[in-house]
Amino acid sequence: MKKIQFLLFALMMIFGNRLYSQANNSVTKEVQAETANLKKAFDSKNEAAKADSYYNIGEAYYNDGNFSKSEEYLTKSKNIYEKLNDKQNLEKVTRKLAQSQENQNKLKSAVKNYETASNIGYTKKSKALNSNDVSRLNSSSAEKKSEAIQNNIDISLKGKENDDLATSYTQMADVNVQQNNIPKAAENLNNAYEIAKDQAPQQALGINKKLAEIYADKKDYDKAIETKKKALKEDFVETNSQEKVTQIQELADIYLQKNDKQEAINLFRNAYQISIEKGHTLEAQKSVGKLDSLYKTSGNIDLSIKLYRDFLWKLPHLVKNDRSLIDAKILEETESKISQLEKEKELKDELIRKKNIFNYSLIAALFLLLILVGFIFWTLKKVQVKSKKIALQSLRREMNPHFIFNSLNSVNQFIATNNELEANQYLAKFSKLMRGVMENSAEDFIPFHQELDLLQNYLSLEKTRFTDKFDFEITVDENLNQQNLQIPGMMIQPFLENAIWHGLRYRKEKGFLKVNFETKNDYLKITIEDNGIGIEESKKQKTDHQKNREGRGMKNTLERIRLLNDLYKKNITCSINDSENGVLVEINMHDKK
Image 1 (cartoon, rainbow, N blue to C red):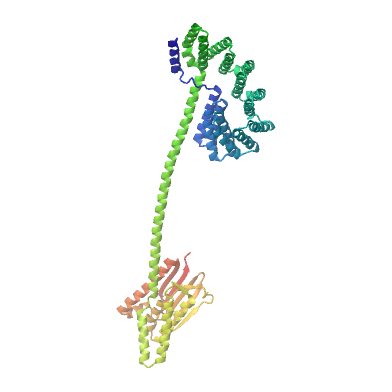
Image 2: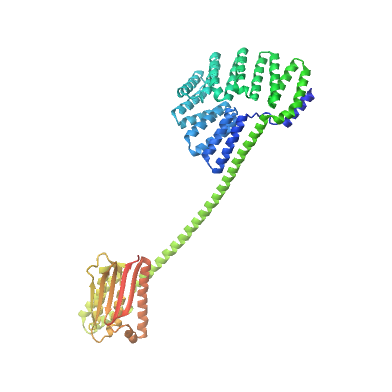
C-alpha cells in the first residue's frame, strides 16, 4: 500500500508539478486579452493604456480570489497613474489595491492605501467610502467598525451602486460574528450573496463558504448543509464542473464534521467520478486523499488500494487533458510574456538613458567648447578694439613737428624784428590751439563747434605766418545741427596744412582756401578747396625730406579714417583731386546702413 502511494506521489510530481495552481478559464482569457493590449501599449509607448491593462489584469485576479497576483498588477498600474497624475483612475486603483491587501491581511498597507484614495477624493462619495474603510480598520471597537460599515452600505444603497455593497455586507457579518449575533451575520451574508452571485460568482461562493463555516462552527450542521446545497443549485456552479466538484467536497467536509462518514464517502466518490470524467487532476487527487483516509478509519483497505490503482491508471491521461493545468500553463506563459515586455522596456529605457547621457554630455561639451571659442574670440576682439583705440589715440595726439617748429621760428622772427605785439598775438593763438588739441585728444569724436574753433585757430596761425599768401573762408550749412553733431577731432587739419604748405605757399599772388560744411541727405559733406599750384606741380618742387614727411602725415590720416570706420561702423570716405584752379578734397561722413 505504501509503495503504491509513493509511486502515485512520484507520478503526480512528474505529470503535474503545477497541481498546486488552479486557473479559472475566464481569468486566463482576460489576462491573455489584456496582455495583447499591454504589448500594443508598450509598442506605442502609451502609458495610460499600459496602466489600464495592468489594472484590468489585477482586477481579473482579484475577482478570481488570487489577491497576491492582484496586488502585484494593481501596484504597477498605480505607479503609472501617479506619474500621469490621473487622479480619477489613481483613486480607483488605490482603493482596489487596498482591498487586495486587506484580503491578504496586510492591514497596515491597506489602511495606507485607503487613506491615499480618500485624500485624492475625486468624488465626495468615493472620498467618504475610503475614509470609512480607514476608520473601520483602525478601530478596535465593534460598534465603531459597525458604524463605518453601515455608512458605506448607506452610501452604496443611496447611489444604487452594488460594486462594494456585497463586500460591505460581508464586513458587517464579520462584526456580527464578533458580537456573537449569528442571525444578523447570516442575514448580512445572505444579502451579500444575493448581490454577488450575479456580478462576481467567485465572491458569492466565498460568501457562501463563510456562512456555511459559521453554522458549522456553531454545530448547526443542517443549516450549513442547506447553505452549501444552495450554492450547488446555482447555474454558475452547475455549468462549471471544476467548481461543482469543489462545492461537493466542501459539502462532504461538513458531513464529516457532522460525523456522517457514509454520506461524506458518497459525496467524495461523486466528486472523484466527476473529476475523472471532466479532467480535474487536483480535485481528483483531493478526493482520493479524503477517501483513502475514510477507508482506513473504517478498516476497508481493499477499497483504498482499488481506488489508488484506478487513480494511478488514469492519472497520465488525466494530467494530459486537465484544462485547469493547461490554463495554468497558458497563464504562466502569459505572465512570462508580460515580464519579458517589462524587461525589454527596462532595457530600452536604459539604452535611451545611456544614449541621452552621451548626447547631453556631447552637447554640454560642445556648448562649453563654443563658450570657450566665443570667449577667445571676444577676448581677441576686445584686444583688437583696444589696440585700434590705442592706435587712434596715438594718431590723434600726433602733431606735425614741422608745424610746431615753424610756429616757434615765426615767434622767434617776430621777436628778432622787435615785433613784440605780433609775437604775443601769435603765441596766444598757438597756445590756444595746443590747449584745444590736448583737451580733445582723449576722445575719438568731439562736438562740431569745438572742431570748428580749432580749425579757425589753426588757419589764423597759418595766415599770420603767411600774411601775403592766402585768405580763407569757412562756411557752415545753416541746416547743420551744430549742437548735436559729433565729428573726429583734428581730422581735417592735415588737409588744410597740405593745401597751405604745398599749394598756396608757392603762389606768386595771394591764394584762397575755402572750407565748406553742408548736409547732404543723411550725411555730412566737407569740401576743402584751394587755388594753389596743384598736386603735380607741388610734387616737382618738394625735396626728398618733404615728400617723406608728407607721405607719413597723409598715411596716418587715412589710417585714422580706416580705424574710425572699423570701430564705430562709420562710413567716412575721402577723395583728393586736382581741380581747375588747384586741389579739391571731399570728405563724406555717415553711419553704415
